[in-house]
Length: 326
Ligand code: GDP
Ligand code: CA
Image (cartoon, rainbow, N blue to C red; front, side):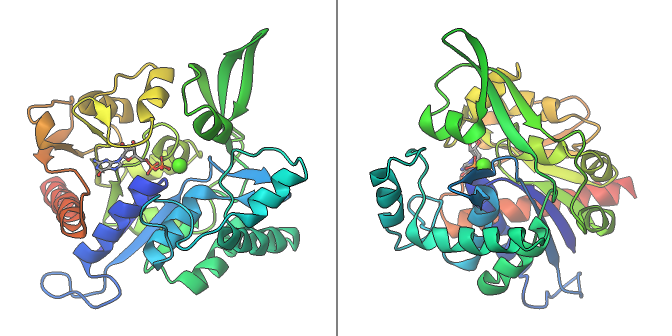
C-alpha cells in the first residue's frame, strides 16, 4: 500500500511510528499486499523560523528524529541527551530571542541545513540529505520549497500586531487571544517536487492527529495539495478527544478560526469534500459529521501497541472506504 500523510510535529510523528509498525514498512508485507508498503510524509513547514541565521524546521525535524530514533521521548521534540550550552552562550551575548529551545545537538542539524540552503539547495533536497543519516523509514518531503510562515495576529498595546507562530506558541503559550492565523506566502507557494506525484500514486491519504489548523491546515493551504488529496480516499484521526486537545493548545488555534474544539466540528471544518472517514475516540462515540463516515476507536497513543492499533484502524477504514467507492 502507498500512503500519504500530511504531518505536523509530535502528534504526527508518533502516529507515523505506529503506521510504520502497522504496515511493516522496511520489510516486505505478507498477505493481501504483496508489494512493500510505502509511506510518504508531507511535512508542515509553516512553523519554520529563521533564528541566529539558521533556518529551523521544527516539524520536519520532529518527524525525522522520532522515526530515526534520535528524539527526546520525554519532551517529544529535540534530541535525546541534549544540552543547551549554545543557547546559554547566545543569551550571554544578549542575543534575542531567548525563548526558543535551541539544543546543542539540534544546532548541528540547523547548521547543515543553513549551509546547504546557502549553497542553493532547495529545502526538499536538504531534508533528503538530513534523512540519509536518520533513515526514518518513510519518505519525508516538505510541503513546499517556498517560504511559507504561519503568523498570528494578536492585540498588543496600540492595536493588532502579527507575530511569528513560534513566538505565540512558545513565548506566549498561545495565551494571547489570536484574532487571526495567517499562512504568509501560501498563496504564491507551490508543492515541493514529488508531493503531487506521491498523492496521485497513493492508495490512501491519512491525516494523523496533528494540529488541524497550523499543521494539517498549513499543508492543505499550499495550492494544489488539498485538491489532489480530495481526489483520494482520505481518513483522518481526531486530535481532539472529549472536547479538548490531548496535548498542546490546538483549542486556541481552533478558537481563532471560529471552530469548536470538538471531534465532529473539526471533521466538518476539514470538510466532506476532503474527508471520507474520521476516527474519533470512544469517549466521542456517537459523533456525527455530514457526509463523513465516523468510527470510534481508542485514540490515545499511550504506548507503541496502542499507537500501532490506532494506525491499523485508520488503514483498515481507508481500505474499506476505497473498496466501497470501487
Ligand atoms: P505539534 O507540532 O507538536 O503541534 O504536533 P502536531 O501538529 O502533530 O499536533 C499535535 C496534536 O495532536 C494536538 O492537537 C494533540 O491534541 C494531538 N495529539 C497528541 N497526542 C495525541 C494522542 O495520543 N491521541 C490523539 N488522538 N491526538 C493526540
Ligand atoms: Ca508544529
